[in-house]
Amino acid sequence: QVQLQESGPGLVKPSQTLSLTCTVSGGSISSGGYYWSWIRQHPGKGLEWIGYIYYSGSTYYNPSLKSRVTISVDTSKNQFSLKLSSVTAADTAVYYCAKGGDLKEFDYWGQGTLVTVSS
Amino acid sequence: DIQMTQSPSSVSASVGDRVTITCRASQGISSWLAWYQQKPGKAPKLLIYAASSLQSGVPSRFSGSGSGTDFTLTISSLQPEDFATYYCQQANSFSFTFGPGTKVDIK
Image (cartoon, rainbow over all chains, first blue to last red; front, side, top):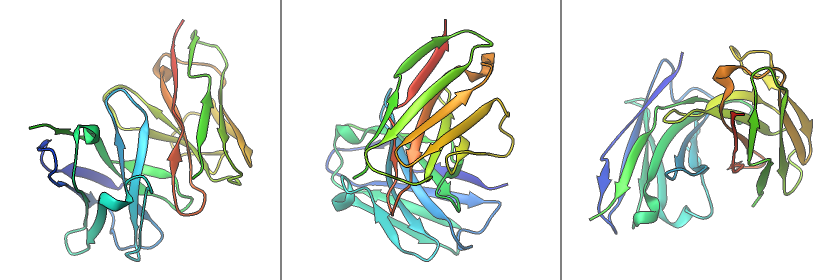
């Protein structure tokens, strides 16, 4: 059973970089065919896909966030990470990490972590 | 970018009712569609993938259908634990988009 857990600061100042890490247990992040993804949800709103890193290391980002997003992987720690630069209050959201399966469905999710952007 | 719409945005129903939620993609996505259930304060839970495949452990009262641009999620007999918000998600090409959600609440 794969489990994911987000970690990182819950408060980030405007213009700074939001950094979160997702630790994966119960499976290897370098095993084939999976899309290790970040998804966010603004308070009281719907879900927004941020981007993913494929097991091969290739990345793909939501075009609306692409200029500010970097997703990387540390296979030695079985973790992948999100960096979102130049944040504003509009980036305040619950951030989820998730595993994208063979048919591009998100079959495992972390519990989510609230990140607030405020001075 | 592929846009997703859902209807209705909310529905009030009673235990035992049949509930149908519709999801439409702005362009054809074959069967690259999933459905999720989300309860307040919780992460979304995968219900259906590849438009009609039931995720392991999900009750059989949930079913999905459709292909191309039009899809449906049906709950055959609504149970108390089914009151939640439901999202569709497309995964055509290299990107993913969620629908705006449908809230199912108690009538």
